[in-house]
Length: 265
Image 1 (cartoon, rainbow, N blue to C red):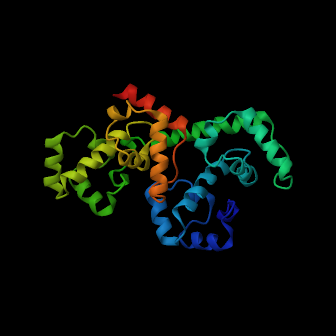
Image 2: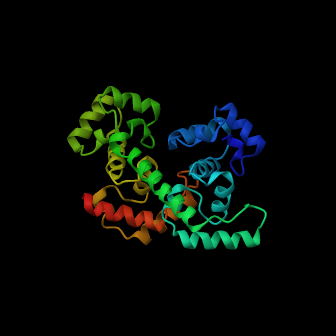
């Protein structure tokens, strides 16, 4: 599918994306958070727009959804596979029917509840795969927020190739790594905190930075937090620093993270 088929892209943005080698939906979908940030700089398109479009690409490739239904799902508040994965089929259908009454020219026909169940199941599978891909073992060290190519090369030279390599480093380990890489202990300690938080499925480099920013520096500490209060602090951070991360997680996601943290600690 061509990139212009994403709702809201249009000809102007499509040309910018094509110049950056993003001509098709499939080109945008697999980009990591760091790559999306690079793309924002290259194209001068806002980070928020790019992340919104990337989320829509995931919906578009779900069997039976396509551009038409992804737009409708977006209009009723479902703009990513992670959002869809947590939804109830009947409630989602009711919202689509309500939307169709208000704007009857957007979709050709109302999907069946069985169709929506299929979409939700596929979204769950996609979200689970995404969680695995952001696990410390699967994540290159350069993906940790703030490392970049310069520090990443130094870390790799010192034998730190993936995020998992940073987990469990004690003070002596951090000091030795700082001496090898000529990177400050403070920075390495911060990255080690991110790595620890990434042991929780679905957090990844982006949310690890967010959680660390609001004062949570380990899985053990996260396990003791209240989901509602944590989400409030993340939402507040998003207002203060709107380009720091894509969007706040849902309450259900935060609840799941905390429950998993309790099991890990």
